[in-house]
Image 1: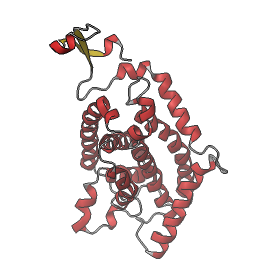
Image 2: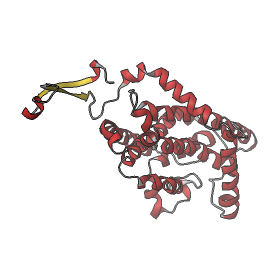
Image 3: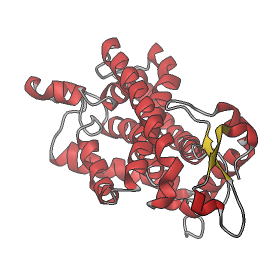
Image 4: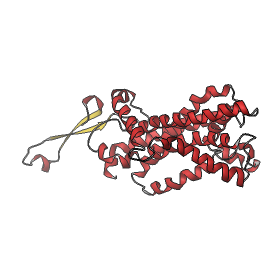
Length: 303
């Protein structure tokens, strides 16, 4: 039920003469519209419902591997197994360059950042379809659900980042070419950009999925295709000049390259490329808010 201070307008409209002569003798009705601008982020409501946000974060984190045999060990196994496969297939068989870095460290850096974006995007894109029953019964700011996904993803990232950090420290001591630098201070910005991009693109897909269910199937392989268009398994320096501009057009490319450069000293870092990623994230968030705020008003009619 909408609260009085959450309505933008309350319009009294006289009924048609035929309605006015009904048995109930109702002569007026009321239209309640949500007080929400196109780009509005309900910060006040998010703060009011912060307990729900924390509850959803805990649910997402605890329930992820509930009733599984290995449980939280999957947080460790996933990046390690991916790194092993990438090392064998792309490092040893395909002989793809790793910018002179140990292959394990190179692939683990890409996998750690990519997994956070991938999880945020996939889970956020299911916001409306998976939570339609809850949305139809109780009121709360809908944006809390995708926000909880991004925040809970940070907990998983922290576990996997710790593993990566252990390898980075080991190779820093044993391999002279590995040289962490002051770009490590950019880590909060890189995480923010990854979270905003995953949240924004996921919210757009979630809103569109309420009408176009084909997008659910597109997500399954679209994310995989995007990974190959991102320097997770190859460095930007290994891309032929003719194709480099296409890879750099991917806003995730500068983020992963900067992360890898910060902790290993190898990679391509450009302030203009990072600025491009920031601009892309801001535009994507604005577009996502416009679409999300519009769809949340009437998505129950189509889901």
